[in-house]
Length: 493
Ligand code: GLN
Image 1: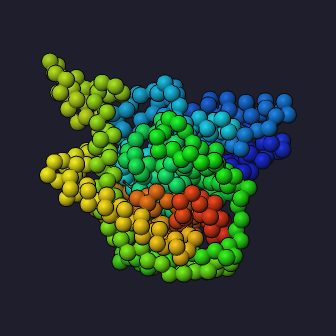
Image 2: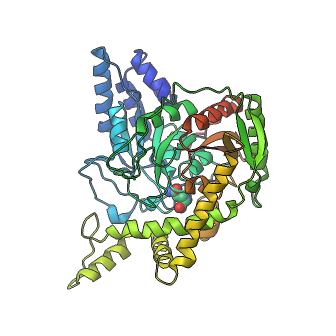
Image 3: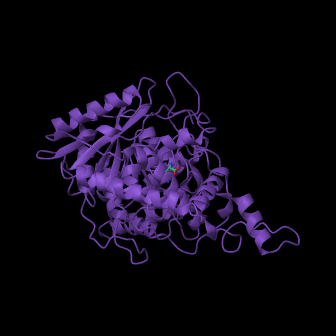
């Protein structure tokens, strides 16, 4: 039944509902594919029994003639940033190794309530800090993609690299991701899949390990726009347990899908033509304009003048919030405790944090603590917050002239693992096109456009108005229908 693993969310859900196959057959096929793909290192733990139990529940519901949920019978991967009751949750950090939550995150609970099951907890950059999946305590994730004619291990992007790798390799039909400054969109672009970060507040942050709370958003990663629409519908919704949760009904995004863009205006931000962007990416951007025009949209030029300040501002705001959020990992409440002989409380904090956090996490805590410290606060943190406001205003002004914005997702295709490790600034540049929408809290999606001369996927990004996930999904669908993207990585794992 290995062809079942080629199916996406919609095909599995509909196939289970109409009796073409059972949910158990699907779960078994994916459990086997996951077990066979250890070389990808996409999962930190696998949970085949969870997937089987959810599948059996879906099959039993069907036998009783009951309606299956919108994710009925679909097994998915869960980024290991979501707390899952009774299943180790680590944020890919040593400091949380062995932590087994007593509670379920709101987003994962909603997915189970919609009929999904869990294949396992997906690897990621430690505390979601990174763009290559090399900061995980549990080892880097490998992309299923390789350059044509090369065996070099490639990055699946980050931080949701376990998610992107698993979905691209077809060992999961879909996976959850989180995006603070690009972590859904960049890995989706690197691996030839789709991923949408909804408007800030759409998906509850409750039970998601916090990185930068004013930016963190969950979203789906899958191989089609339709599958993302379905899964986002299951994940989103008001949650009184998250103070920043949007008090809005969840639209029926799947039913609202419509690739006819007549009357829509798509903005092209001139500031996104940056030095260092691959020629092939610029070419795919041109191609994207053509696709949207063909779908009936009008293309207009817009300006987002503060774009070049967005990334530096992000690398102040995000570490500042991280330094505060990560203060809770002290050896007392969760996971690791390092208590040297005869040590006092302060020594225990220090020893636990020194042993438990990876280098990138320490770098962020140090930067964050510095920019929040008396004497530097105004020079860094306050300035960055002002820039954040200006970036948001740029978008507001642009959206007076257009309905959505088209841009590249990343300045380059995926790179070999290890190639950017020594250079955090170049690594941070990966998110230069992703971060502005994060600072502004806007919905944004990456959809695959094409493959480059090396045979690696390239993605295009649609950024929408607040709450207009539908407009983003529809523009994404119009591009998907025209790109005909069907490239797949050749199996080596
Ligand atoms: N790569 C960015 C960072 O390292 C974004 C991470 C994210 O969105 N979680 O902070």
